[in-house]
Every structure is written in structure tokens, then in C-alpha cells.
Length: 165
Image 1 (tube, rainbow, N blue to C red):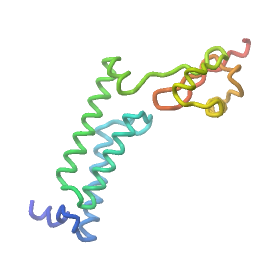
Image 2 (image 1 turned 135 degrees about the vertical axis):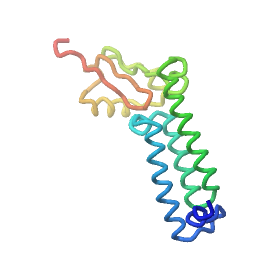
Image 3 (image 1 turned 180 degrees about the vertical axis):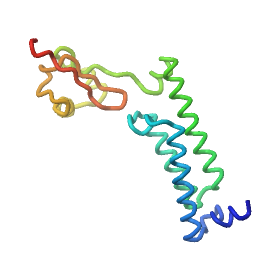
Image 4 (image 1 turned 30 degrees about the vertical axis):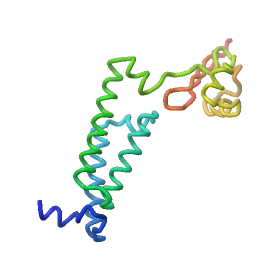
């Protein structure tokens, strides 16, 4: 343990350049392990919960890297957050109430070409934002849309009207 402490330096912020580099390598590897534990979805389909977890992980690893927080304490705290996130993700698969609480629910913005102005206002989406979201999904106008939904991750998904409609 003494040799390891010599490699990573003190937790007082007074580590040498070499010790900080060793910390960086170890924390990079630990970060990869955390991503593997958390699962692919954690950083691919970002939800508000995922953003919070990513910020906490980044902050913890940064503080541990620079010696502003105890190295092993930072690792332990980060691992607790990652495991908690994974357990919450598993719970959202099993219980819809937990899913709605932590992930949110999709919101219908357009149904059968009609824009829900109240939904836009409640979620602070301007008509220009809606138009941009529709265009990004290859819909020229709300009239061309069967369903447009604000998803839990903040994206707008669009189901176009059938061509014969």
C-alpha cells in the first residue's frame, strides 16, 4: 500500500506531475470500468438522470485526479453513484412508477397535424423549436405529422402522416 501511495501521491493537492499522470491513467481505467458497469445506455440516450450521474462522475474523478479529494474515497463515492444508477435503471425496467419518476414521460406535441400549444408552453418549447425538431425528422410542417412527441431525453420524435392521408 505504501508503494501505491508513493505512486499516486498525497491527497492534499501536492502531488508531483508524475503522480498526477499516474492518477490520470488509473482514473481513466476506473472510468472505463464505471461505464461498463453502468451500461451502454447511460451515455448514449441521455436523460436528466444520466446527465446528473455524468456530472457527478466527472467531478469525483477530477477531484481525485488533482488530489483535492482522497483518492480511494473518490473512487468509492464514484462507484456508489454508478452502482446506484445501474440499480435505478434496473428498477425502471421493472416498475413503471420508478421509470416515470426518474426518467419522465413522453409528451405529445402534435397529434394528427394539430399542435398542442399548452404542451409547448408547459415544456418551454417555442414554435421555432418545434419546427426545427420536425425538420430534423424530415417533416416540413406540423400538418404533415401524425404524432410528434417530446421524449424523456429531450428529443422530438416524429411519426409522419401516411402518404394517402
